[in-house]
Amino acid sequence: MGSSAAYTPVRKIARRTRGTAQGLVTRLMSPSDFGKILKPFVFLDLFDHQGAPFEGGLHPHSGITTLTYVIEGAVSFIDPDNVKGTLSAGGVEWMQAGRGMWHGGGLDKAGRTRGFQLWIALPPELELGPTISIYQASEDVPQDGPARVLLGNYGSASSAIVSPSPINYLAVRLKAGERWISEPPTSHTVLWTAVASGTVSVADELRQGDLVAFEPSSEAVEFEARTDAEFVLGSAVPHNYDLVLGSHSVHTTPAALRDAQAHLSALRTRLVQEGRL
Image (cartoon, rainbow, N blue to C red; front, side):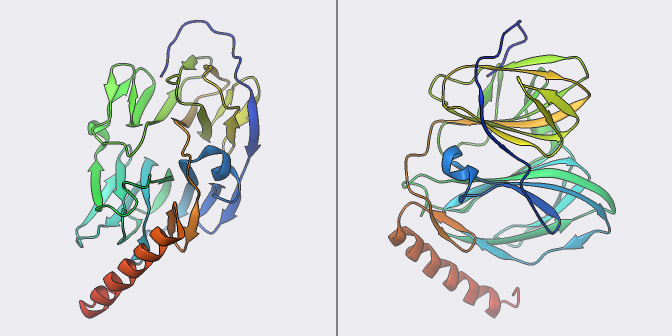
């Protein structure tokens, strides 16, 4: 998904947003808005925090996977097996919840911490499946040109993380004046981008904090950096299933949600008995 050849953009922007501030994060996408048209991508949070480190408590998920990408600073994590660690700048946390899990985390260093957390809806065959936790240091994230491959494939680079469905998720950095073309696979008619810093032009000018959904098609998009810029880009085959929502959960049917909620409740009981909640 990408090229450096000259190209006239033809894929139009369908919708754009700057999201809603929610404490330490700005929610750019949720199932009630952009998630409806961009599924399997259902939530996207942009975090940009300046201050003291802190540790958050455990919380549950089911039916989804979360991919956290740290651009600056570091975040701490507590995985479902009570393993604790730190994810530094450039690193990726992949947490495939399946039938259900509890995890936690926070900010690991004083100062500025920036990044994105993306939620992806799982297909029926995986939404009640096992939990998978993967942590990649910056040097383990493959790169082709200006694009780091957080999930899927781009050029000669492929993520070691097995995607639950056909998805590409890239983090791109461009210097002022540089151009870059996104050419998603033909089947990836879902496409969006969100800007972490700087200003880029994609037929319209986008700045830090903007998220845009492109019209469904198989066309490419050219990005031109007006200033030094960082952005993420997601493309996918559409998720042709309902989004059935629970607290911290997204499933395809009410029955799957009920099953997962019962499992999460049982896990909570065990965590209380172990003194972790």
